[in-house]
Length: 354
Image (cartoon, one colour):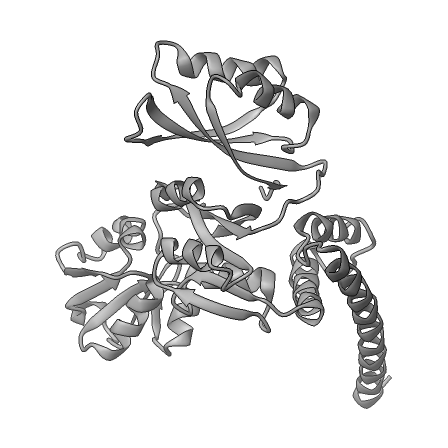
């Protein structure tokens, strides 16, 4: 078969794909109309996970799991925009890792609102100016993001999904030689994650200027003479800043966990995970007694993080993740046992993203 015949075959297949996608969108639109009449949420992370898992059991041939995710997550995003276009707030600016995560779930057509603080994302959600919010909550190198943990306990927004993203940093500059760099812009977290690279290139003594995001670092490095940025590849590309070195982070397994926040409750699934904030009494053995109730109910804890509090009668607030959905019988058993002893705030139940 000649190249021209192959091209005609590709055109024919593309036409079929478009027709099938339009049929899918018609079904999506019909579901959307039903959801709006019953008040159900448009974004269903657990349903999307079921679809992706099912597709990955089929004969993939040329498409691996990552390719299936990339294609169908964008189809899901387009579908949601057809059902009901809604705003997505994220810790910005454009080109930040959080923006990258937001686009991976809400697609290129999403209506994004970049904000300069995590608290601002929660405020926008609380004021109903956006339907979804995307914020970081922890990094496997730097640990938990305290502001996010604190805001979860103060605002009504719930966790509806979690995403783990590999974090790779680039050293980008207009300087052709790294020795000419006199100033380094970076978010402090990004800078600290690349200290080994900086030490190896005798850069630890170079002036460091902290920025609110890696995207801002790239923007400043582009407009400031003899400077460089430690930033994401997407941020360097956004501001047309040449990348001198890629993947400069100390920990090549560097990951950050992000949360998607909204105002609805997911239905239970086989891979459900729940997050709570627990305020335990300031008495000897109070925390141990509390944790033992999970053990007795056979609820598996996956994370516990302490936070300080100024409230009388409580010494610490604990952020806790565990397997299961808030509506599961054994989880309800834990809540019932503790309802008069400890204060528990449900933060959300969602599909385990690990």
